[in-house]
Image 1 (cartoon, rainbow, N blue to C red):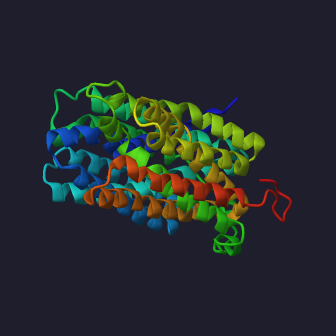
Image 2: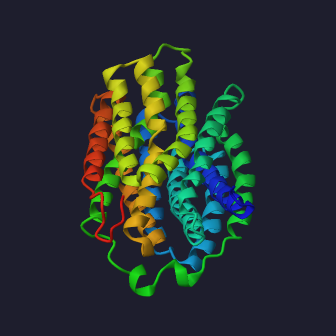
Length: 392
């Protein structure tokens, strides 16, 4: 039985991810086809908006590397979360493209901070209570948020236009952010257990952890194209009015929601390394599906397999990293996600270049497949046993 205090800690982390990551960041994906139809911007400009958002995400994740101490965590998380929500509100009034570029950059910075620091705060708090195996459940909020953003994009679609489509997102994000701040402020980390001084500032890169970093670089580039352009790809590959044009995002969100407890349990039972290897194989197949089977089959497989694995790979990587370097949990998490953010921003940018030179959005998914195979190889190369005797 999970105690009330742990449930509230997980709720605080999940609501933070709903507001900042699902709504603040990924709501852009189901909204993108509507923005294109409204003439707010074109597909190439849409890819540029995504790229600037990911540049901000990288900057936020890099800033989080310096904010991993307990005192800084408790201050940085609520400030970043509230800033992210204010940006979401402002986007509802951004009809100017240059202003929207700036807002997506600011959204990325605050989102990067929240996505790194909120789960890190919850993970460290749980680890001090010998409950780190529950940490993956914090990402359930993000998965539920994906479902929510799909509904918030589609339900009022006929009544809103252009930047107004952000209004329902903002109305939901604001109370969730306030609730998250109230819950996360209750979490107190014991300084002495958080990290011995000589270990907390040790080397992040060694023979084993470097392989994890290399794998995560591929993961960032590999997942981002499907999770940014899936509804738009469905619109291009399927006949007008097909249920998967809006339904693909719902399938991805459902797969994500149901897969998080599964990957959390598989990692705890069979080892995070082994589960991570399996997740990258399935994710690569999902990314390749629209290339191999264009249309209903490819879009469905992409939605289910990518949606059902990409957050699993995040939570497994975070736990595996903490196993490799237990006294640098939050710092290692921040460094990993900074790298993840750096490689994923290349995805929309390369897609935009490819489209500008006459290529198709479908063809650009080849890059993601190659990146995920890279991630699988480096994860597979991590030794199963550490010199300390720990089994991965």
